[in-house]
Image (cartoon, rainbow, N blue to C red):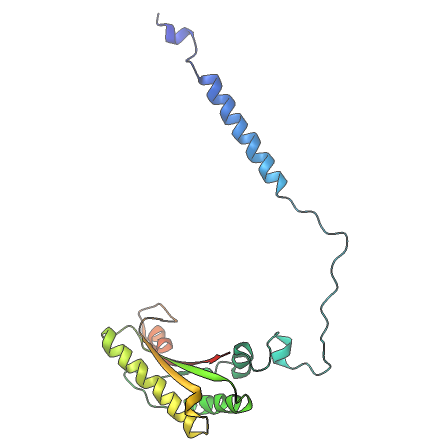
Length: 182
């Protein structure tokens, strides 16, 4: 009869003891992560002004990028048809809202980002994104916004907002986005 069948192998107890210690240590670590409820909850925040508008309720500082986005309610972005960069009537209404906000805050600057969908070459889409951003800028300038306050940049197809390869995704990616600069 072999001696390995009669006597346990060396180190078996040590392995079991080590595994047991790991389980105990893990249980202790997890139980230490529990949090106790505070004795007293902090007071609810109260508005500092009696005239709280939608932008102040959202915590946006007037004239900030957050205020711009809140006031635009989606009109910070205009969309284009395939291989187009013309500003249609819906885009004109959105840009008119942007111009109104920019006139209200004459010290604010803005960057218009031009984007394209994934179809076409990188170079073609960068050029198309630039034409889209410039079309939006030119319309804002025609409404009285100082051209020195507006810069443009093209990202082409490099920064898609929708990742699908279908018409719905492509339509969302053919856009110009206005971002205010603090």
